Image (cartoon, rainbow, N blue to C red; front, top):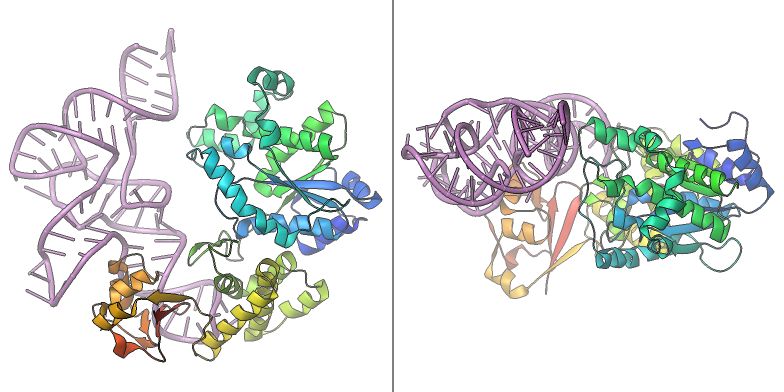
Length: 419
RNA sequence: GGGGGAAUGUCCCGAGUGGCAAAGGGGGCGGACUGUAAAUCCGCUGCUGUAAUGGCUUCGUAGGUUCGAGUCCUACUUCCCCCA
């Protein structure tokens, strides 16, 4: 999809070399614009959860590259669009979120961007805006007359997101049907307010983005471009971001730096190079050398990846702590004070606790039955010794060095610390 | 407004038509093999609890028939299709 001839602009060259590009509208024109001087580009983020997850990281890194190559990123918080709900890639309508939920989600998400982008008033400083500021101001008739005239239902029905719903005989409400108009209006609004001429997003956003591009070109007769990033999946075809503990959240209070580090450390061999290019700032020649490491030496590259990715999000100190804890736990089989801990009342421990109950309380299993199954399957370890009897009572006699080490499988470890 | 169909284990898809804790698959989890990888093989995947073929709660919602209902009946809810 991208042009065969090499790009002139540092921006597109970087994106292409690091694997950020899936599709671009008018590649030569955009390249020329980005080569001539700073451009402004945006990506929208809906506030459907209290934290962004690894899936969003791709977009955030794309904005980071934009800024690194001398351009201005805009982060659009979807305060308004979240009220509508993006139907793309969803089989069914989601329950609508309340204004309070949306606002608290946005507040919780905000900090993440500051880790990756430099905000401020300078020409290439990032800014953050909320599309609720304009979307919620329109009257219904006003909106229809102003923007509705530029969209034909014929065309809207042809978009994948809509077509799929119809083909699967799944309902799509009129509310959701309007999502693409809102997103297009966002782009137009940003073009007018900030001279923004590029919208980026995941490949599933292509339809929505192209609509915005066309709206601007039609209404304001200004150049506008769209760029999408490839769908992110692992080499073995899994959708990226889901793992042992569910979604890989970016907020530290929802997923600890240690777990975040572990997530990257567990990358498949075949993905290491790609992920290094996408999710770290390491120079490309270094990455090329790392990904060529033979056999089990590739694990060194995974550590580099884990360190670099964790440093970006949580800082170098947290990354170092996570790396130490991991090395201790996996390579030296020793206890580290930095492993996830679970505090347990000392009296209760002295009185004795059923192992299954403790495993549940420590968050290693969802129910006692699950804990039992885990034990029967040989996946439960107490102080590194396999324990098949989940009914066993645990008490102060099980303390080793003042703590009890519980493990579910090889990777989930919790240190029980009496208080 | 009329007619026909659908809703299943709360991760998803999907069999089931009077004896069912409910086939099968995907996903997930655990084990073996490894390198905290992939692939492969094996086990598990409602809760609770054992010495146990135990108890409890599940098939859109609410009632009913029956010794017994996901399965039959009635009403309701939501969705899909056709006709108007």
